[in-house]
View 1 (cartoon, rainbow, N blue to C red):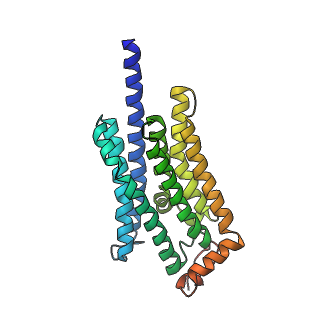
View 2 (view 1 turned 45 degrees about the vertical axis):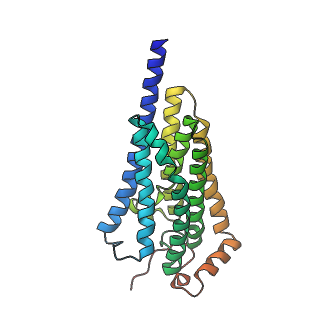
View 3 (view 1 turned 45 degrees about the horizontal axis):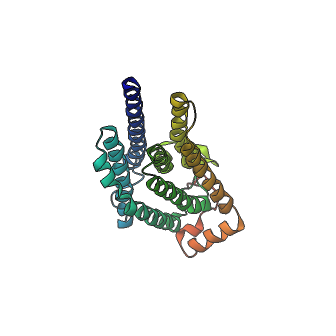
Amino acid sequence: MATQVAAGTVALDREHRFFFISACIMALVLVAGFSTNILLARSSFHSPVLHHVHALTFFGWVVLYLLQTGLVATGSRALHKRLGWLALAWVPAMVVLGTAITLVVVRTNGGPFFFARDEFLIGNPVGILAFAGIAFWAIGLRRRTDWHSRLMLCAMASITGPGYGRLLPMPLMMPVAWWTAAVMFPALFILAGMWRDRRRIGRVHPAYKWGLGLLVGTQMLAEIVAFSPAGRAIGDMVTAGTPGAARSIYAYWPQHP
């Protein structure tokens, strides 16, 4: 009996380490992506205030998630539970700021040229809402730690797209650049969790299936809307009278004089 308990404890410790290591890699992707943007002078600290507030809020979430997985991995569960309540305010703030920055960027320049205008305009808020939905689901299941930890991994993975979008050669991936950065590469973290479950317990936990399904399904829905007449109308309405209205609605190579 004692041997079984010890084996179960070791397996649980390994699982917590997996989530912490995954959190470290996801954080690295995001930090590397935005650092690369600054080093290549594609971004600067002279951006408007909203950009800084948005960046600090999202980076704060990365730090919180990294800290939370680290606390569980080191056995500090009481502090993990207390800090977890921060998410109730943090996640809605991310939804508001993520949507706001999307609107500002689309009105300013129509969004990154390697994404279709409406794909970015609609896909970004939908992705943030999917993140929020998964995160709140995980919080609701906080007492079922197997679901909670896996759903939180899925939520965090779903917002790594901006990091990949700054690291990968996006122009070379047109016209599937959005799908590559927002879905395919973030899904690798969920697939890694599924592969680990299959190896360790012989089956894939349903939390991963739901997380992957929501990541893929919500972006498929966003793509359908973005390239529909309704999506075009939304894009035209948002960019009307702004510089963003001048760009092509499809991904394009910039023309240099």
